[in-house]
Length: 159
Image (cartoon, rainbow, N blue to C red; front, top):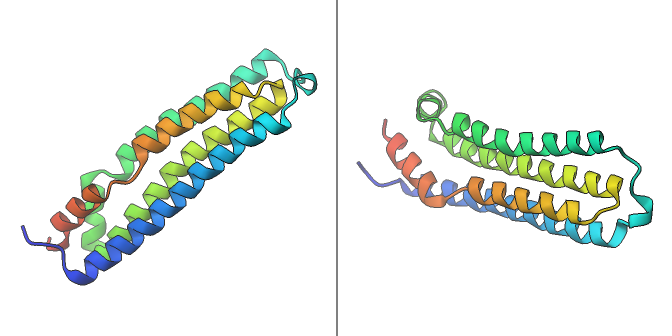
């Protein structure tokens, strides 16, 4: 097994920094939604929705969170990544790793947005906190790890 070439390493680091920056921006927007929920949500404005609607939205949020783990398994399947590097080159592989990471982080952002909607509809800002905790777990589990990216690229660069 050889080392990663210099130009590939530069592209890998650039794409990783971009993906990490975008994911941190999504985490920041999650925190902004939590603050907005506590500022904007008034208990007297809530109660505009039934319990069944609230639970349906929670099921949708949990479905998005759980499906992100399943989608992660599909996107990072070794055969898929190997075929991509063979057919389109190592540059396309690195771009795909970046896009996959952003897609998975967007699933966590969906959970946060649904939580914000629930908190507005119910008038309970703590609903947003519950959604934020779930979203943070999804962010942490799906956060891209540079060492894994390097290992994938190293193993597939000279295939």
